[in-house]
Length: 211
Length: 224
Image 1 (tube, helix red, strand yellow):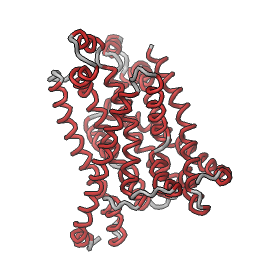
Image 2 (tube, one colour; image 1 turned 90 degrees about the vertical axis):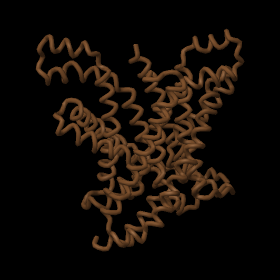
Image 3 (cartoon, chains in turn green, yellow; image 1 turned 90 degrees about the horizontal axis):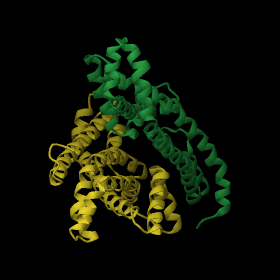
Image 4 (cartoon, chains in turn red, green; image 1 turned 180 degrees about the vertical axis):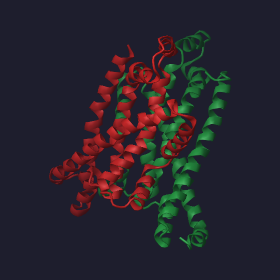
């Protein structure tokens, strides 16, 4: 049965894990946001010899399980610390999702904007940097935020390569103190408390940007 | 590496068992998720605030707590309350609840996207609420649901290796056994990634066919 004292005792450990979870999410998402844009640009603006392999590789990474990718990277890439490797794999996996988000955002920029650039004979670099990307990024901010929330909820996977994030800590505490019920319920509550307000904020952002 | 191929051919029956478990978890999880998606999605459009509120609460709960926490909670914490489920049942339940919550948003959005005039026309023709939903609103909503459901289904398939963490002998579990018995790490994991990719492609092609069928049924041949 539920033991309030055990829950209180488990709280510091779970919160310590939450810190790791949060840092991992922020770093991996920063990597995914930058790499995702690079992947989208390679497919959208790059030459065919680059665009096709990038599309194929991104599709493969996107369609295979993150857990297996983590296992594979863990044994095949030696010499990296578990947290570093975890952030890299998580970041690359989500970059393949975000590249699709960016692509949709770029495609949503009205055709007239491109035509105006041609009429002004703007150089290609300026077309992307000054006209298309600022509008595309504005289009994709809400979906990017939603992916950040779902990445946050997938960080527990890093525990399989011994990263001491929240679910790993909850699991360890649960097994050593025989308090699985309390430790996992706390972890669930922390996820709920952290992702709920974020999702609500994102919905408001989406509504504001829609006008 | 030299003895990987003979080991692999000996392991084929076990890998086939693992593949079957993965497919079983995907199909059962998706079936449960689909039922929940419809129930929660339609209930969260109810005219009665308590019903709508309760449905929203369930959806937000299962979307907001991570799938991994839900699975581990069912496997480790639930037995402490006196209920012990089979590992595969834990997995199917966690997948169904989590993806059902996400899917309910798809159902809700698709039903809301059917033009209001369609419902009004059905009312003018004297159709009752159930008949309206079944013959007018849902067929049009289905055509909109298939593409997002395809994404969710591939996500669900990609989440099934998680079940190997709670001792379900799925494809990942079996290939991990093969890897530790042969030491051929790279070959084993490449094979595993390739198999999941193949499964994802098969699912996507199947869902594309379903989408064409749903659009044809709703009289939208050639796309929306």
